[in-house]
Length: 320
Image (cartoon, rainbow, N blue to C red; front, side):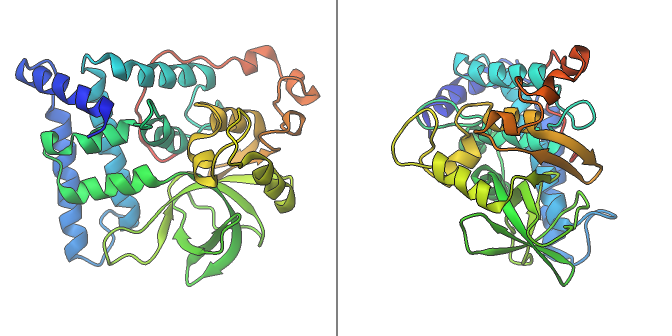
């Protein structure tokens, strides 16, 4: 068990014994997820009307993670304070929830706060802590496996290759694997070579042979593919500096700071449709982003439009 999780476990046991925390909502969500798993293993049809079963699994799992994260807020452990401070600061800065008020969608932001905000040398997240506490919380191994798939995920930049048999074909930059997936947000791709900034979750259980674009996709209007490759080549290095990451995986999951990708999305936002959000510019070229603080486009926006107000940590988990 990792260091922070060990500390939390001791406080959690004491809080449960003293009835300081309420587990009623957790037990309800846990029962719903277990029922969903049983249905999926025995049925071939979609579990919920209009919802793909793989999407249903991950949506329910995220809801359960969110309930557990709220429970952790009631555990009096100082090591958890860094999480709440980081998350609250981001909500205050960006007023998350999706366009038109914010470029940070619920689907993106909730994945970030649960899966990517990392603390300590072991890079513990709220989800790794929950996984380490699984036995104490009575979480079934099937759920733990889904949580681990989610924890292993990250944002990525993908090239759209077309559609085949009703599925979307994507390939991550610098990699060869073609990923067959669905996109519940509704975007099916517009032209070959279109660049998607999104989080893709893998299939779970043997019945699935496709992946899931879990976040509403951010479509990168420009620059082009080659300039994004140039950005990756500049930013990924074995030498440790403030402007480089050790690997593509580290860069896309953790950025170069806690709020690296949040700030990029905020400054690169151009426009949106219900099924996608358009971005423009590179993370390391400030003036390429329309809302970079020194750009003419940014200064032209009314000050009151730039003000983003939010005061409480909110674990809302809809898929917008």
